Length: 371
Image 1 (cartoon, rainbow, N blue to C red):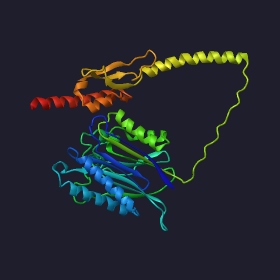
Image 2: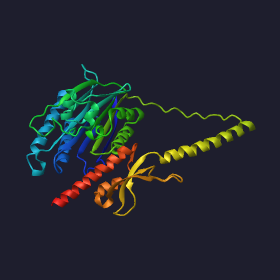
Image 3: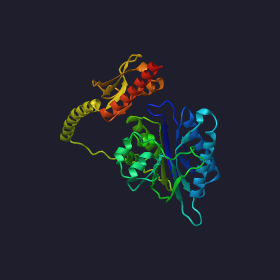
Image 4: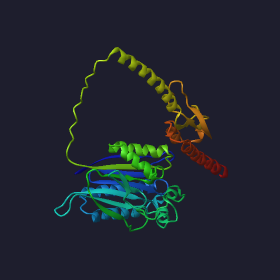
């Protein structure tokens, strides 16, 4: 058996830099979510990825060899965090999927390893299961039964991790060894995905997307559509066999002859279908919500529109909510993202997104006033 994969990463809708990093190659798949001030998180995650890539080049033989590589990456980051001031205290989560070759005594296996709250899921036989266990404050509350899974997703301290690479000289990585089974699909992701997309919808995207790259792209897009409050990185890894499936030759149907009565019936049916299509098109054109600027200048207000970003026939989008923020208030990079008109399935999600931008703008105004 072998693996095929797809990977995608995005800065999100509010951040200005991407502190996530990843590696996706046949012998190692890793997602790292950096943390720390300034560029420190970006440095920590990059060091973690480079360490795992280098270790893969020497070869992974057992789960212990994967954990050893994680410990080595931790030591490298911890040592680097004692250098420049802006790197002090930097750290990163790390979650990994490592395929192991068969040996004389063992079949092909998959090692899953984790430190922090980036996750590995397994999609098998139509069911989604989280393999890794979050090392976080909220996970401890969930394990003890103090909060529900839904409350954990929205908890204000959900991003506080209890383990991370680089914080201490030693780190305790969890690891699991699973059999490599044809048809299995592994999902690695940073918390930027799970904070915005719940497990039920993650499972739906994995079910609907046969191609792993399409699945990765759609999951990242969904996280951004639902708010994109953090960087988001996704790797989808499929276990397949070595055989290549031959394409089925196309079948050319033979069209039967139609009578005049049949043609008249078809024409009537076409007219009915056309009327239904126009009605459906109107419903589609007015359905959905998207965020954008109502105008082109610096004073253009940030609003939630009802409808579709592109005008369809005579159906134009209308303003549903005004965030009381103008383009000049928004970071240029974020304004460019908003110009792409991110779409949302509900007005509440779209409103929450623009309100989060408004909160940042108001905080900046207060800071400037205090200074």
